[in-house]
Length: 293
Image (tube, rainbow, N blue to C red; front, top):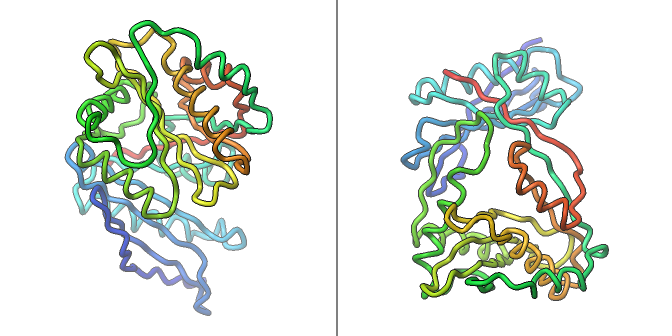
């Protein structure tokens, strides 16, 4: 079977990456699969490429995926990349495909969901009210308030030592402009970013944070983004405290919201324990694979 692979122009240019794309088509012109290769452009990640690849189920095991992969890997090498990473659901055909093509497992994520109708508001309120000497909670929607911007950006280093198994995801640097741009991007697509932080007294700096993105219509499921506590402030129960307040606010302020979604590296036992204690129920796992070029 003669398959035509066509490179495409992908307009999805972001401040941190650009993408290459390929379309596989049958002799009749019917699309049979595609591949996207994201090339990270920020310093600290510019050795990485991230692959997304799909082949129509009816056309699998005919070499289409292998050809798409070969073109993507060749483009990554030509661009000077040292790693290609890809993600697949555990036990899926994509999982087997990546294993068969020289990728190695570097990270397993457990996805979990909290049905908001089952959230115990009284228990959440009790957690939120519990004393955490030397700390207080602050909540905002959208872009970080000016008076907290510097220490909020600095608090992002709390993610630097997050357990990520063997995954090479480079280093990500945050500054005030970047945290503001990230919040604005959420607003521009019509969603709401709510941030809960723990403030350390007496200097008023941000010691930890958790972020939740709520769909603009207030329905369906909201998605947790980052949660982190700076190393010097760990051991005080701040992650559980902040997440409890995020759940409480979601339940009270968005009555039509169905649930909250989160994902956590299997090696991050502490955050998984926090999620379990707050009622999140595991739904599925994904595996991140890495090809060393």
